[in-house]
Picture 1 (tube, rainbow, N blue to C red):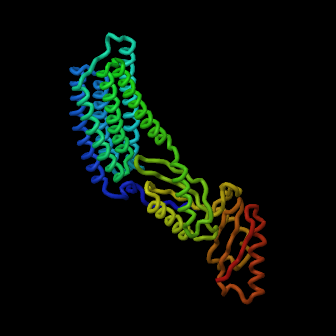
Picture 2 (cartoon, rainbow, N blue to C red):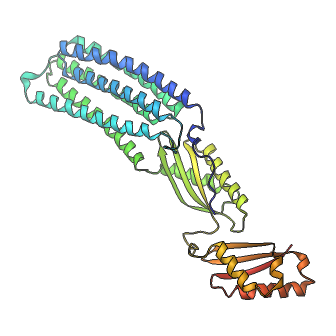
Length: 393
């Protein structure tokens, strides 16, 4: 039997308000966008008039931050929408797709900066000679971008948003690149004309590293890569701690934006009632959601036996067919009309049959044993029936 929960299209809004989540993400992103716009304009402008290729490259980096801020706003707005009939698992993957796009954008920006810087290194007459103005602008950029990093990272942790974490590290990469610019500009001012172009190459490599990390992490999510091994072990331990769970197998996990989903097969007593099996499955589901932070929903499949080791029962006849065959073999027995319930157990590729008769159907113990043999003997002639047990209520 399979116990599947009846929460269809609303589970992704289970923790906190999606509206509040979007508002918080929008606020931190708008602040970052305004700062990036001012810094990008200042670095490109003063990089040109201050003759610093690395500062211009850093300005382009800030412009890419501005584009990423726009992507984050779009993703936060659409990714926070509730699940619906078209997207029953929610819209969290919108964040993932946008993060891949952001990573690809950074790789392109890094490539363009690097190609230009290398060309200038091989053409000394094209090298820039920046001054104090470029140095001051780079220093201001370091302070502003580091402050943005800490602000965005705090909000990302509170919202558990990988996209905001990515944007926070994008801010920090811009701060680090501005430090490299300061070194390049300072070295050029000290009489090392190649240092500014080398610094531009260094900035490009950092941008490329951030872009690759973002794209690779999100691409792994798009192909449903499992959670880290330690998180999977934590999930396994939580499931096995539930009363009534004998074992588990086929545990699968995957990410959905900032959340994670899981499905698992659990082994229980094969003679449990359907309602008790469902209760065990719901206990497993609720415990995982409450104990494992990123888990947002779980699909639990109840197994009465280890179907990785036992013979499959899928080819056995249905209940309707089995009951019809049993009654055909029992048609000569008057007691057949007094059967209260027939329970079928599909286990290890065979059928176990339980027959419930009223106590009034028998006169004494000897008669009860006789009736049991009369019901079991013909029924066990059926090839799919392994055993018949008769109980009196």
